[in-house]
Structures are given as C-alpha cells and as structure tokens.
Length: 283
Image 1 (cartoon, rainbow, N blue to C red):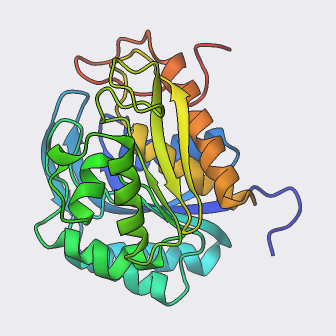
Image 2: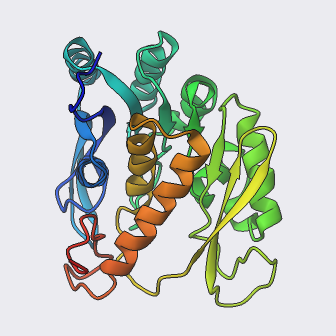
C-alpha cells in the first residue's frame, strides 16, 4: 500500500520528444501538474521540434520490457498509459503485460502519425493495436485519423459527429471498455451538427452503454503540439488519483483546454508550439 501522504504513481510507456512538447515529456508534465508521480518506459527516441520529426531511433524490445519490469518491481503503479509504441512488436509486448494484469487502469493512446505528418508506427502496428492491445484498454483515445485506421475506414470519409459515434462503437467492439474519439481534427464539426468555423470542439465518449458528446470552447491557437499525449496522460493521472473513468475524462479535457488557452500567446519554435501544462501564464 502507498503510505498516506505519498503521491499516487502512474506509468507512461511512450517515445521521447526532444522538443519536449509531446511524448514522454508531455506525459511527465501533465502528470506532475496533476499531483501524480510519473514513472516511464521509453520506447523510442525521436529528434523533433515544433516543425518536424527528423529522426526516430526505436529501442530494442528487451530494453522496453526491462524498464517496465524495473518500475513495476519497485512502485505501486495505479494507472498506466501508452503513447508512441513505434512497432507492432512493442505493441504486442505491452499487450502481453496488460494481459498478465501488470498495467492497471490502462489508457491506450494509439499514436500513429505526428501532427507534422511523420509516421510513428510501422506497417503491422495497426493490426497489433486492434487485436492485441486495444482489447485490454480501460479507455482508448484515438484522434479521428487513428480511429478511422483502427476501423479500416478512409479518414477523409469522417466528417460528422455521427461518423465519430460510429467509429467509437466499432472500436468498442474491438474490446476496449471505453472509447474517446477526439474531434480536434474535424473541420467545422459541432455538437449541434452545423458546419461552420466551430465555436466549440467535440469529442465523443462511449462506454458501451452511453454515448456522450463532450464539447469545449475552441481555442484559436497554433500551439497544439502534444495535445493528445497530454489528454491521455491527464486521464491516467486522474485515474491514478481515484477518479471514475467518466470523471477522469472530463477533468482531463478541462486540463488540456486550460493548457491550450494559457499557451495561446506563446511563440516557442516556428511550428506548432507546446502547451502551458503548469499554468505559468496565469499565475
């Protein structure tokens, strides 16, 4: 048992981002901001900044597994998230640990392509997610592109909230306990079905029985690097703190919205800049 006063512990299994906007670095910042001690297992080292990913070095499976083993042997991990897993072999290795019950309250963020367009998953990885890892997820958090690929659907054909709901049902059918389809890449999508520059953004949450459209005010900013990583990390952090899943999703959404809004005026880098995880702007 974790002694009273100790912070809850979460584990993130993901890639490193040298620009520190996404990946392990975004996970660490998100979890720390929410009062959770974050442990890590790094799957890949990327050379990237706000503009581009210029190099990816994938770690050997044995190195990834030994990191997970070392953490679990010494810490009482109460929630886990996955980010960039890079290869089908790593996806399957993580899935084996999940199947063994080693990865509690598992949040699966099926990272496939960076916002810059760089491919972050090998060709067999999508099937590995479908058949090996997603079935063990307490919740999986694909963006529209990732959700469409998981369902074998053309991402260009996803254009409405109804489409997002269909994707959520299909991914739930793969075995995930719950699905959060993120709608930030859906131009003009609004919960009321209208098509216009959206005053509100919509995510779709499905737990197998209830479909919920979660709307947030649109933040006009180019500083969106690491949004998906931060959201899934925040969900895991809130789960580690003992929140129920639906509460964890809503609180994580609020956290990311605030981080986006606070960083809206930043000028860090020449591309899509990072979020303000710690509320520096409004302190």
